[in-house]
Length: 262
Image (tube, rainbow, N blue to C red; front, side, top):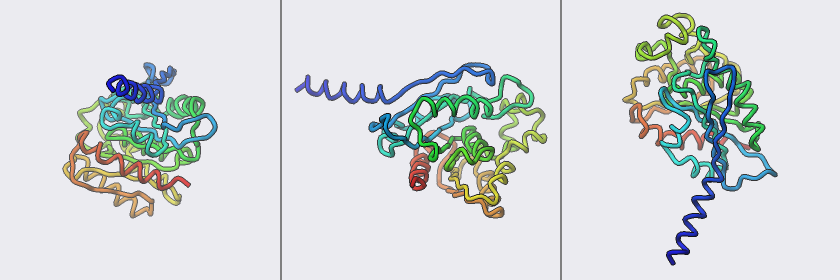
């Protein structure tokens, strides 16, 4: 009986190991290699394509953050999604910095990361989704606004949608964009970028905890969406800026994405 249980245990362990891959990409756009943790659904094969969900981590996090918060392998198996978790290099803010030549993360993402992921996996390019937490929420919505044609939809949880929030003055953003709340800060803020989705059918989901310091900014983003008639689905629920909240918020994003797949 013990031997049988051991075999079953090893089967599930090995199945998960083979369903997860790490890819390291080097690029002249960024200062150091980027590591991507990839989760494949249990029914993954080379004869069909699969939807993909890109998850971006928060400030000071890394490519392991989302997997440490929740069981991405279980979600991959449940929905049939490929999950791709790149490294935002601690504090890149996922932008092309006007000041640091070796911090061009947006260019890396669209020039190197996305093409490599499409080459490495059987991705359904009509069903690519992107979401993120905090800094990653900013990155996900920024990429979506810049190239909405590349994604089916996007999401943001506890997103840094207003870089001119005084909270960010103490971060590394001045090194990337210059003096606090100058034109660069305003231009990169989602509150301004979101206008690019005006007069389109593109949709996205975003949420923030009612006790979160970023809640007011997300509420303002919701008001901007209403004013511009942009299809943003906003959820305000009890919670703060922490892993417990993000673990509870991700399923809503996945259900939203799944509902859009035809």
